[in-house]
Image (cartoon, rainbow, N blue to C red; front, top):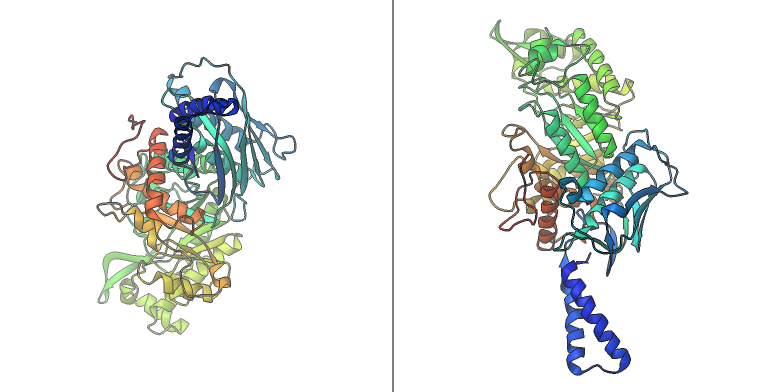
Length: 553
């Protein structure tokens, strides 16, 4: 995609107009023709960067149109199924007005001496999704046409319209005098994968709600559409359950300051909805549950040293009926609080040593005919939990360990690949079994390295594994993970952005058009500056500067 330095273009077009006038009158010299050639060359190579992630198809021209905040409007097309009063689009219009006209919010509006020419962004959608939530089948396709005085944005759903508004906002640029312009442009765009997620871990370090909301904003700028909320884990249980309040009052880092109330959760879900982002909670078990045991007696397995209890506890106790009664009540609540059809049930990294030490667990295994096969015991537990959520009409996501232990789970269960070694072979095995997959293994960006490690995320080829075309259709998307051992609100955004945006383009854009890190670098550098201007503390990619540097909180 090509845009032009507006100040240079203005002077060049002015000179070109004079020369073209001389050409028509026959008063043009060889010097004039040489100058005309230089102008044409300059116009062809004087570019600024384009939209991130790159649209599927985009064409633009040097023809540009001035924009003025005093004469700029959003509106609904006559044939649009969504009308004024649509919560998603009305909110998007307000947001994007201020994102496009940054000076309007700062009070530094440049002086205009030309007559205001109105410009309208007219949005039409085929379906009225205004009061619904985005889901796994939501279309995000849109078509954007920018011409004189008008941009026409057409989409099947409001979620596609929101993605198109983000693209339009990135087309707008300012010249050195602060005047706003947009070039004549045609875009037809849609995501390569339907599932494009970000994982945040709020157990190892508590993240304030404001940090989560700002993450959702930045996700929308990169066209991510799934927030995977790894809300609880061993270190803390910050989710405040209305059914089991002791889980957070005894399991959170602090029962008042380091929790997510029901109101907090609704606020996150509501904010995400307006951006077209799904919120998928994860309540990981039977492992990663030490914090659960503080507020729920008899949930965890007592560990033994010889014939006596050691005083320590292991994974969830899979042999007690009370365990499944508790889980049924908890997931019934979670299913009502989180509207998305998916729930992540975890199932990874289950240590068997405590189960092996417990005489009641060993006796249960003999009764069930498991012998000493503890993966079978984990399979028994996970199959029971998946059945609980299936009865609640929820689709389960589980980590790949559940598949690796040959557990019997419904075919609509989604497998989540996290292990970094051999993930291509795992993709082959899981899809050969007819199961759907989300790939996270190559995008664990909580691991950091000196230099431009975004290259690693950008060069991932999610479908580069041995399998048929039908198998590759089962890869529904990918996820960028930010685990929280060394991350809290002080460093979340610099560590996440713009590195996560490399994964965003891989999951949205055509792979052949976006295979070069060298070509991507100036675009990502420009996008990083856009994030910074929008208040996201995105770290620099390399030496350089942004025209509008970060101004603080």
